[in-house]
Length: 387
Image (cartoon, rainbow, N blue to C red; front, side, top):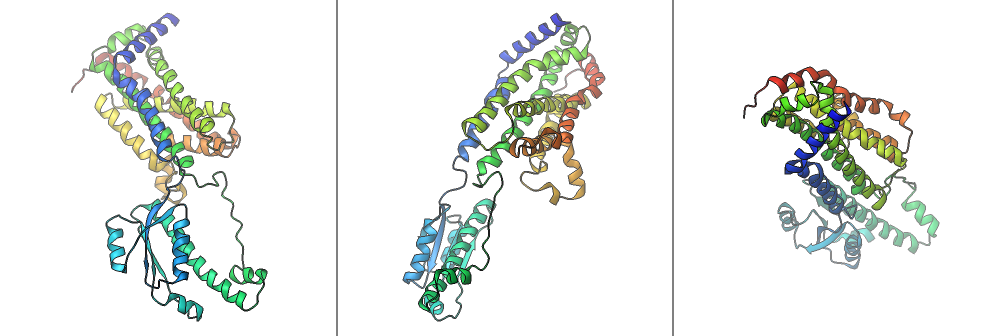
């Protein structure tokens, strides 16, 4: 049995070496996604997003507000427009993400206590850019009224403590747990890259089995295992497992130890989650091929399921805010369980016992091929490839 297993593994390694698609999908593309996303989000947050100003007041107070807006890290004043219409057209042409409108007489009305109005406009075509520009513009509006109120109270002889109490009666003590920098790289890369790796693993698993039928080598493959389909599958997918583990562990070392992404989990926990991630994706790909032993159909289902998992894992949109049927459906996606294991055991450092259900779910995905072993063996011995 061990000699048969070794021979199947060597045969599979020869297939991997000769077929460039394996190397592209197993090594090159996963590593490129790691470099791409970590480089794209290297700054953590978008920097110096273009905004504009319509300053019809043109006083020292309004210019001070504009200078403060330009000093923000995420916003940069790139243009001054003479009218609100021109600024709005520039925003519609995607030249700016928002603009601050200061009408004429703002400073005089402030000093006279007549409560003037300043406006800010921002686009939500791009959700993240719009929300951050909105935050900066809203902060500037608040700072403008506070600055005038501070000057007025100081002129009346109020102390600094009285001024602070009048301007900000309640002080907010804000604590952002685990990701205090609001770093997009920390929470996007750790979801997108594993999700893409899961997609590649399931696709290559279905592709490997479909190729045996396509190139008419399936009978020879089963014969090498003496008709034992379990031995044939282990011998075929064990080399792929080792290659994927090398890629996954390289990714984990790069983001958690080289780039210093926050993590409270032990390295053994990282290794265990990486192993379960690959095994679950392989089990899912083999199971899909067993349900529909067609190269085209099985890869299509794996692609669809992998793409949907980015929405159903709960990273981009909270799962608890989805409808009840979608919440139930989310349990059928391996990425959902990987993401929860990562959040609970790595990001927050809780013991595995707190996430036992998601660990068991990944184990269930790993064991799914047991239910389609008969179908896979029948396909390998009797099916003929139809383009």
